[in-house]
Image (cartoon, rainbow, N blue to C red; front, side):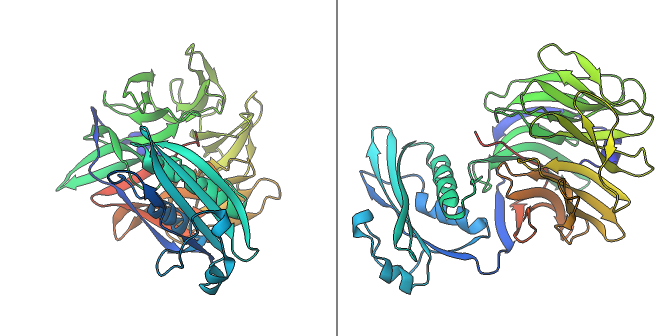
Length: 428
């Protein structure tokens, strides 16, 4: 949640690196009408003992979660052992259009996974791959395999290998405990980076996916920290007088865009991370916040109330006059940019509450993506297919996701507590 009220929340952050107990459970609440029928046959295994993960089950679950596929795994014909054994007719009789088969065998410390994708209707093999996967990274390997299969069928890159950062909240009476978490795109393999007695907010990934920046209040005022996700090392990068908020990493990894009130009202600044050199990008008495970068790093989009209410503006990185982009409502904030730079998705406010809207930067067309009343903190998937965001369900904070065309909707909820402030990692 990045609404302006958060600037006034005091907090104290307590460092904690541990294995999280909570995990996100993902439910597709609305998929594409006429989803593509796909069969994922159980992958065979040659070797001693059992594997820690069932790769074919993970692949099937990933494809089903996309909302684009109707995945079949039960009552299937005998799967071919290889391309030479493939017969389309028995599979066509089941109604499936695509078939995924695979086998696994031990290869030292690795598991060698071979898999094939068949187009049943055209009776053709789309492709086959042989991938060595470390034995202790089978789930990550399954996500990568899912990405390959997704791309072969749809023509678009998959994003199952990406991770999600989010803030979890546990309540105990009037007390709340916050934690900064990182998990796989399916909610598995959760890791807790920090626990706090007060809010944590605005996580943002580095372009290489190794670090996060976020806002903490461990000195009872907002400060920006930089955190290595794997090693746990962290450093404070912005602790100026007043507000330090809304960090956003540049695509080249050299700069942070920030909202700072060091010289008066909150304005947009650029910080060069190597030198700490600061450059003020806006100079107003209004509230300027929530900067995000265009994929080419040439434009900053940000929220400003300079027109009397929050709206989205664009500003060239080299400076100049900001250009207002949103006009259709009395509230527009918290923009996220699609990886191809074509769309802005943002929180659209009005009498009906807060929904997500998509602005096409080419033709200026605005499309409403959600129908709820409390959407917050949108973040684009690295392949541009989905937007994850915060929402409430039955008074409980959960995450939602919606496809960029508004057709596929998902709900991501923690088994315990609440979740908010999502941020999708890059694909690395």
